[in-house]
Amino acid sequence: MKYKIFLITFLSLVTSFYCSAQEIDQPGYRFLKRIRGIKILDSKIQEVMIDEGNNRLAISYRSKKLLYVSVYQLYSWDKINDYKLDSRVELYNSYFADGGKSLFANIDVFKLLYLKIDLLNGQFDSLECNATPRGCNKVDQAVYKTRLNCSDNNYLVIKDDEHENDLLVYYEMNKYNLLKTQLEKDLNKSVTIIDIRDKLENDARKKYGTFKPITQQVAASEISTSKPSIILTKENILDLLEDGTFENNGVVVKLDEQAKIAVKEMRAKAERADSQPKQSSTASKSSTKTISDGQFEVGEVIKLNNILFEQGKSSLLPESYTELDKLVNILKTNASMEIQVNGHTNNIGVQNLEVSEKRAKAVVDYLQSKGVMLNRLKYKGFGDTQPVASNDTEEGRKLNRRVEIAIIKK
Image 1 (cartoon, rainbow, N blue to C red):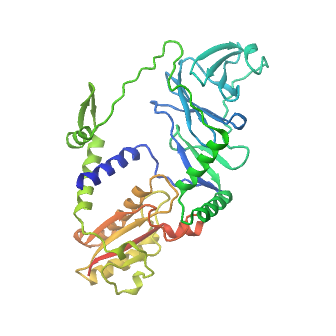
Image 2: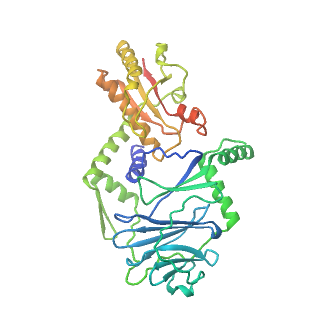
Image 3: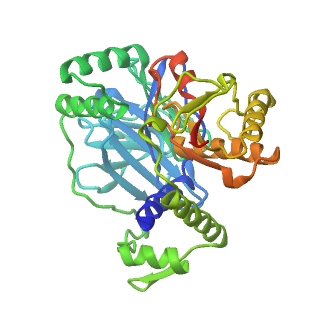
């Protein structure tokens, strides 16, 4: 059980090194999904092009030595393929043709040279502009396409400010709410953002079909496509957790010092979670009781009012101290009382579980700084798994961003 909890947490850690804890929000739109870019050292998105007519999305990524292009189907967001190009290539003024089967890019605006990528077989051809579908219209400047919103106004696609290789996909809020209501009526049950996303993507596949090219990476000129791959076994992961290193297929994988510290902290957290007493069924339900009520029973959950943090962070704001000082007085008056601080978020964001746990810990740290013994305090983050209101409205999301305490012992 202890290792199961820890392994799940470890996988979350690996994701957290890449994911942002920022709250992702765009007025009038509902966050739908993240399109993760190719991991190339010191790289970022260079050009993005959406072509509704051919149902395609193209993204190019530039590093110091390489250029990659990823092509997706629009609306279903299925990846067609990744293409690794010669380091000398620049993708300017791109467009799809042949019904979306080929991508043409003006790689030299002065010599009017084009690169054609055949999406069916991954082959590359250099062409004079008179051999391209649009002919020899003079192009006197290199233009990177960064038009990201879709013309039907249903979708909004933007770059992630913190991760320059990622795109964020949003759906128009009113249409999202209508779709959610209809889907709940059809299924006769509550639905989640994942249900909505799956329906939108499956509907797009039915409407536009699926695209299944020969799966390969074809490189231009001297660039090689061969890449070593490692399949992790359970034993590999256990070795990594125990020793900070393992060897697989002749490749040695090691954790750096920061990762070792993070693993050590997570192991301790997993052991605490495995050893702490289970909460009663009432402890997972929000209560209308507040600190001002004064009298509490074991298993009750009490909401703390006006517990505020910096945007997307776990730093307490001074406005929180009044409520927390009331809690300090209660704990000092009831010297045997033990509590668990529970952190909750709404469903806006990409790392809600970690944010909620850090915020719960910040409350525990404050209580400890005021003289409450740490052995009377526990904390846990629930992320967005226990909403008390709808996340489809600002008021509901505000209610779901909350801190509560569960009474473990009187």
